[in-house]
Amino acid sequence: MLILILGVLLWAAAHMFKRLMPERRAQMGDKGRGAVALALVVSVILMVIGYKMAAEIFVWAPPYFLRHLNNLMVLVAIYMMSPAPKKGVILNGLRHPMLLGFALWAVAHLMVNGDLASIILFGGLLVWSLAEIALINRAEGAWAGREKGSLGKDAMFFVASVVLYGVIGYIHTVVGPSPFPM
Image (tube, rainbow, N blue to C red; front, side, top):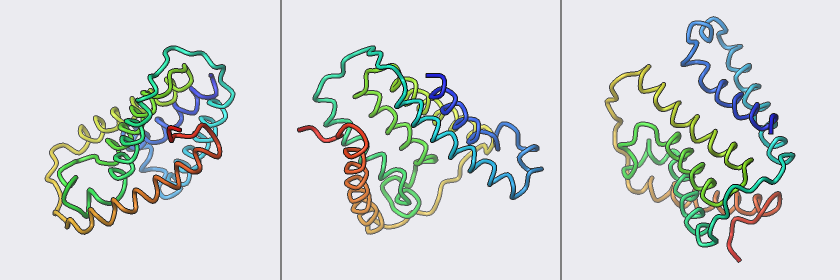
């Protein structure tokens, strides 16, 4: 569990570094991008290894029907993390569509995974995404919005999201439990 927790903490620290220590980040210049990217790669590796190594400690048993809701929520989360909110109309009014999509993804995974390692992983990432939104809002102040795009772009990114969802679902089935109810 320690490796998993370190991975989640490193993920959060790397993402929040710019907001929490702006002077230090600015001093690093372009080299800072590489350092943050490296920290993020290491954090993902730690999370994967820690999650795979964690003992199965079940906290609750999720009902089977939640898998359907999880799949729908993950599809919406993928769409929210696409360029659609910036180029389309439907989600144009959201200030942080990618972080909100990430939070939705984390909640979806918390709904269908009742073990302690999943609660630490997805719960930690959920807390990070919401904290990141708060930090950005505090640092940047009022938001003016963005120009609206077109419904055609929304449709295009939705189709792309469905395709990406299928690819992710296939990979998920190969490396872990199948997200598709049988």
